[in-house]
Image 1 (cartoon, each protein chain N blue to C red):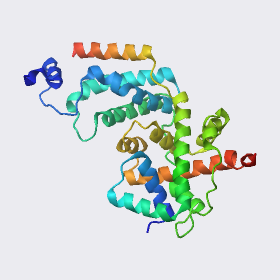
Image 2 (cartoon, rainbow over the protein chains, first blue to last red; image 1 turned 30 degrees about the vertical axis):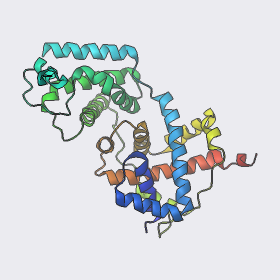
Image 3 (cartoon, rainbow over the protein chains, first blue to last red; image 1 turned 90 degrees about the horizontal axis):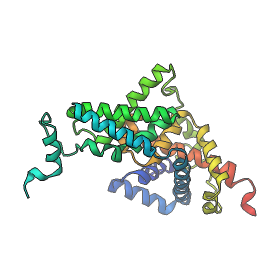
Image 4 (cartoon, chains in turn cyan, brown; image 1 turned 90 degrees about the vertical axis):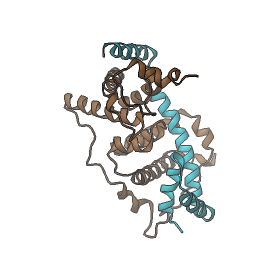
Length: 81
Length: 212
């Protein structure tokens, strides 16, 4: 059985990436018996939702103006080569 | 339909010097749409200056255009480009005589003994969060999260934000942070998230407001 410490890393991985079958089983087996890790998983989700709201405001997209400028520079550089 | 009418062939036809075709190579005309936002967010994260970040994105895409022939499919095109951008950002920092990243950051395992006991169990029982949905709608809560992130060692804050942008593959995040394997990334991020969880716990969910 994995420890909470190991399971925390699996929970994090699962939220961002695909787990291997072995990892997925290990994580879920642990989650079945450990309410603290279940809570960690739930609260991680909330943390991510909050982070997304925060980061969307702080790191938006490239402005339309810059987008057009860069686009035309690339097209132009393409023609020269 | 003739193979010659396929998009990739069209692209090759306009670039007679491209002698080798890689399936993952895309038409540079699509780059701004595909990659500019991802590149921009990283540049802005590092420089905190929108004008500089825009310039760095432009330089990166031009460098990518020049080097496109030498791009091999060892990684995705996006990962390749973010690698170019990382070097552009480093050059920029050098020109400003600023330090790129504090490499002397704390080891993530420093937190291990705070978070877990010797047998790997949570040292302190994680307390439940009351009304998290309500918190998400509250700007004060987001400001506290901001403060919690700002309190992290710079590299850990960067790791957290890069992972939450959700548009970079994990190998790209590792490359940007000089992390040797993705497993180390998951360990680092799990410790950073546990710390942020504690910070939100202490500064929002716990202080007596839960009872009202």
